[in-house]
Every structure is written in structure tokens, then in C-alpha cells.
Length: 116
View 1 (tube, rainbow, N blue to C red):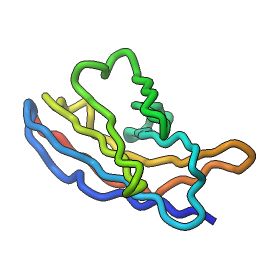
View 2 (tube, rainbow, N blue to C red; view 1 turned 135 degrees about the horizontal axis):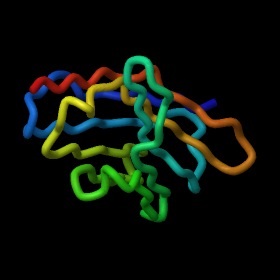
View 3 (tube, one colour; view 1 turned 90 degrees about the vertical axis):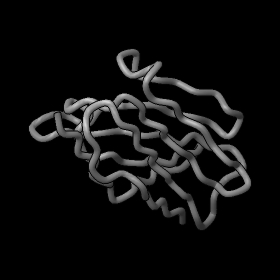
View 4 (cartoon, helix red, strand yellow; view 1 turned 135 degrees about the vertical axis):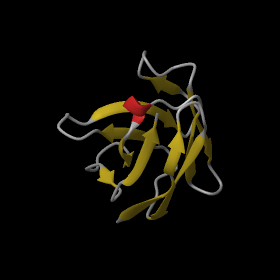
């Protein structure tokens, strides 16, 4: 079984930066894809960015350039650097871990609040 735990986040003003962390633990496969998703109040959950253990990344088109996803394989941790935050970035951010042949694992989510 795999667990993922998010940390970081919190509050920021428009234009500031925040960094999110997500650590996977347990029976983590050598090959995986992990990613960040977010859900704003009254909206559906949307993908922000994903990264594989090989370093292959994918971004939501609207966020590429402001957000950067990176990883540390040895620590089984991914990061989301969020720059030039805007009020529309306010959401609960979730980390997801997935590997072939297993159901995905979601974290509890972490709040990011951006004020104007």
C-alpha cells in the first residue's frame, strides 16, 4: 500500500510564490507517475501537472510557465513551485500517485489561498 502526504501551501498575496511538497511512502514502485491536481470551490478537480520517475512532465497549458513540477526519486517526493500566484489559483491541491496495475492513491489535499 502506498500513502502520499502533501505539505507546504498556505496563504499568499497575488504575485507571490509558494511551494508544495508531496511525499510517497510504503510500497512505492520504481516506476510511477505523480502529479498535482486542484479543486476550487464550486468547480471540478483539474490537473495541474504530472511527472514520472523518468522526469517526463505534463502541464495544464494555462499554468505552464508559472508552475514547475520537479521530483526527487530518492526521497520519493515531488514538488510544485508556484510563481506569480493569482486569486484564481486558490484551491485545494491534491497529490496523486499512480503506477501500472494499481489504483491511484490520492493525498488528503492542502489548501492554497491567494488574496488580491
